Length: 230
Image (cartoon, rainbow, N blue to C red; front, side, top):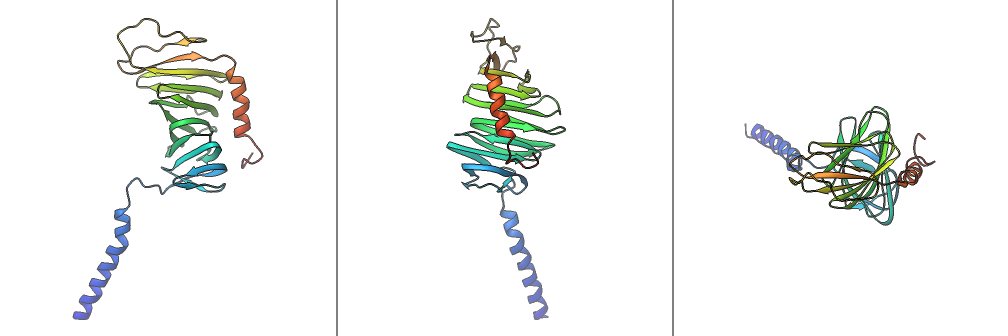
């Protein structure tokens, strides 16, 4: 009888010891593979320096320093981090999501896939499920530069929604909403002013001539001999 009790106790303790690490792990800890590093130069994945071929997990923080770049394949899409850029990446249905804390990223998604980029409280995503690519730069906590090179980008904040058609670049300014419905600050190019939402609102200012240069830069970033499947 004593021997039987000892066996049961040992089995129970073994089960508890196996389960403890699982129970102690944070619910949101990175564990699901999301993608892979295609090319890396002086960049970080999580807490350490990364190399080409490294696995990117849901919840990872990607970071580049000065004179550094990082190119990753996330789900079926891609994201390129320019220098001095920080972004957290997550998996979503049919694509990936990224929280851009600062810097510049190039994002793209193929047919039937999507991405979601969150920056300065705005959400940028493809307007359709067609192939889409673009570049987003955080200039400050209230200013973004948005360029679409393929497909249409949809930009939303609260109930405000605007689109960036392929071949266009816009400077987006975020400002607290007021009761004054008069014209906003003057800027270069064409101004697109959304209606008042009772919250923060954003203004769009067309930047002529920038999209053509950015399109070539993005093409070089996303299409190169080092890209798998190209």
